Image (cartoon, helix red, strand yellow):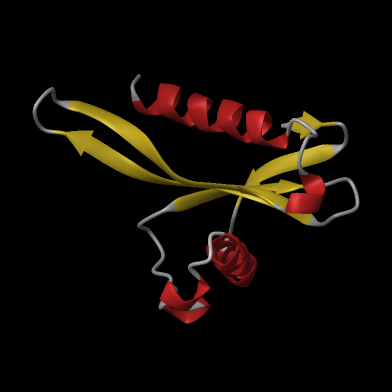
Length: 112
């Protein structure tokens, strides 16, 4: 997806340090930085997927981290948005909305 020359793609294992730094940045902003016990090395592949939003200047502007879920009560698969993070300097540009749209498409694909 392209938004004003920004692009969105799925993260790869090479992006883990970037994802981790955004998670820590959010925790610090929420005054919970001391509660982060995860490390970039402790991120386990396969449990979560992440969309990266890359700004026109090639900075990672934000992420949408989501998990696959399955409701046994209603027998329906879904995806659960765990974190939506946009760096402060990239806010008010429609990037959150763009990530939500891509995430919603993922939800639609799962429910097909």
